[in-house]
Image 1 (cartoon, rainbow, N blue to C red):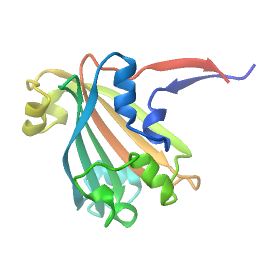
Image 2: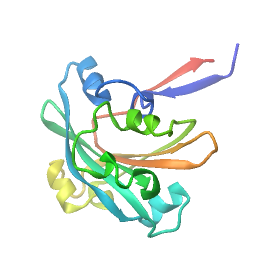
Image 3: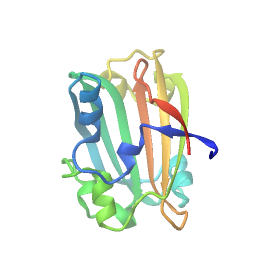
Image 4: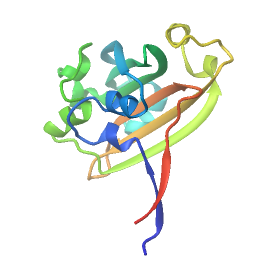
Length: 180
């Protein structure tokens, strides 16, 4: 028997699959999942994102920020970052839906996940969100949130995507222990 390992339900968000992963997850839980793109475009990499992507701070990255909803209730702000050398001048930099999802698009242009690092922390909403984000998620300054930071690496061990997802308390990432 192999070593026990932890598997996360995040796999559906990083592997190239057909369809809307959030809509499918929400539906499995008896809810209607939707999302609204808040912004998309090229920005200078903030220090933490640059560190995750192993690029110099201020290097151009594409940032794509979305409001995630369950039955029209805000549950998360999800922001993905890619080096502009990968995502600039692509649909990822545009404020429109990506047919088949971002993971599928990235796979089509040669970027598939080989390794994924995830960290989850808890914080007060004011410490990790802007006023606009708190208003969109209907949160007060001191309301608790979970922050999932995900770094996706290619087969060469180079990070090509950083996700920072701020989740309203009450939503959770499910981890399952399995043998294998």
